Image (cartoon, rainbow, N blue to C red; front, side, top):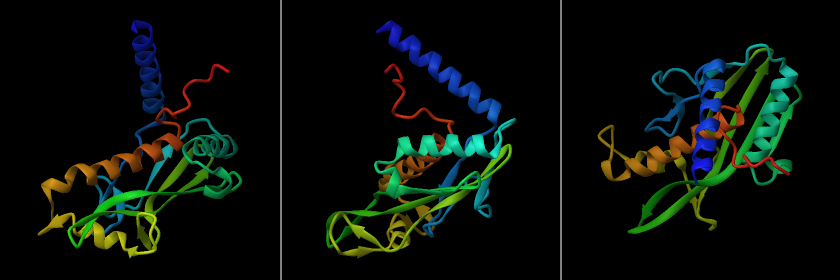
Length: 191
């Protein structure tokens, strides 16, 4: 148990030092309108992450490798222009909507885009494609409408805050994992 804890602490310190060396992590937030923007600057829709000393080719390979570990079906969920752009789409539970007193899962596809140049990556704000669906049914929901129901008079409802903030945290975790600033689930490389 002690060895595992020491190993985890060591791994986290390496990741933290790599993140510091590479600059800040991507940090987006979600507005009442259903749009993702850079946290702390609602007018910005993208953030640039430096990759000091890395070529566009090296960055592209890193992002594609990390993205393949995040998605279930890389052939269908990843696309890109070699050494220039990486696009990822993930269909997932977004938020819970209450319709006719029944809680229903609003499921949709989140799109992520990373533009690559030598030494840096521009991360565009993720967005949710239209339309979304309630769970696996054919019944359509619209993400922006569901998000609006999480607010009252411009303030996030206290009862809805946990799920809302969880979606934001999950979105940022996916982005930073693809960038290589967060550990992937496949940390066991001893094969």
